[in-house]
Each structure stands twice: as structure tokens, then as C-alpha cells.
Image 1 (cartoon, rainbow, N blue to C red):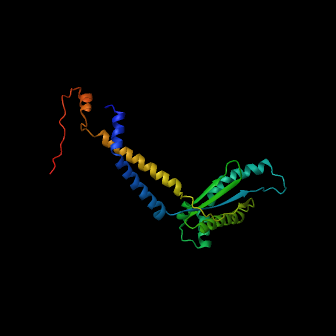
Image 2 (cartoon, rainbow, N blue to C red):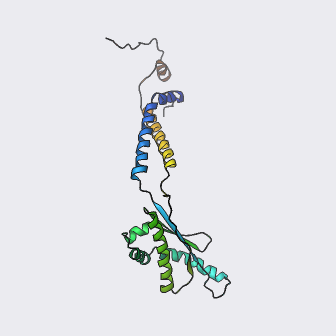
Image 3 (cartoon, rainbow, N blue to C red):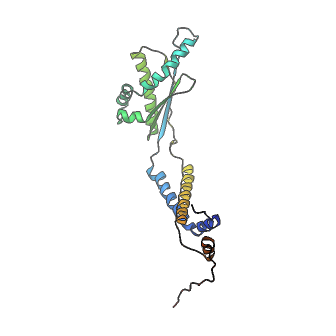
Length: 223
């Protein structure tokens, strides 16, 4: 592979700085249009439920803790089941299908706790919170009637969030600028790498080890 002259490369970049600036400008403008006019803001609605003591006394035994831990994975799967989501859709009158709603629902067990977090994403911040709370409500009712268990209760209800989780104009502007600079530099490097033209007598001496006896200046004809 031919060695790259860093000084020559730097000069080549400087001579084509307008290309880099043009690429940065195009990507920046397109990115801002996407972020402001096209990208749809999404909101989270998050509620949490907790597995509680099932024993008759006030003392929580190791057996109770172990039973709850074993139920965590089962409950996270039940929450996203078609049975639960279809009831939620029916009660709230949602236009979602079961699969579409499932793709917007995230259920996770918080490590080393008996807490399950239910998170719903939606373009409507109020609806996101409403769905999350309704899922918890339907799930708890289903557990109590279908499985005759009283070991689940709501810890925190979802509240309406005013800030979308997928929009951060400041970070996105910086990202677009960085992407533009990187792409612009890559384009200039490719142009330099495949540019086989001779640009100076010094380059002839260095590449071909020939002595240049003289230069013929280029004179532009006028008038």
C-alpha cells in the first residue's frame, strides 16, 4: 500500500474544506427537519407493582421471599399475555391490536427486589400513563380471580410525562454535526486516495526519483 504523506493530506483537506462544510450543512439541515417536522415524539407511562407477603402473620419468612422470586418471571410473562392485553384494549376502547400493544409494552423485574415495572410507550402521554395503570389493574384482578392469589399490589401508579423520551434537540444537533464532519472527511480522503494526478514538481521527484529540469508555467490567455 502506498504511504500517505500526512502533510500533503492535510493540505488536500484544507483545499477541499468547502466540500466538508457543504456535507455538514446538508446533513445538519436534513437532520433538523427530521427531528422537528418528521420524528414523532414518544412518551413513557410507567407503573410498578410489588409482590407482597402471603402468610397470615406480619412476619415475612424466607419461604415467602423465595416463592415471590420464583413468581417474578411468570408474572412478567402473564402481564404481556393476550388475555391481559385484550382486556385492556376492550376496557379502554383502544385502536391497538394485541400484537401492536405488546410491542409498546415493556415489562421487567427489578434486580434483587420483588418489584415489576410496566412501561408503555405512546405518542399520547396521557394515554401512555392510562394504559400502564390499566394493565396493572387488569393483571392484579386476573391473578386474584384466576389463580386465587392475593400477593400483588400497585406500588406506584404511572403519571403523565411531559417530556418525550426519544427527542433531545441539543444532543441530536451535536450528533448531526459529528456525522456530517465524519462523512465529509471520509469523502475527501477517498478523493485524495484515488487522485493520481501530479500536483507539483516536488511530487515528481519524490514519487519517480527524477530530476525536474524546469517548469512550464500556465498562462491564461486574456482578451
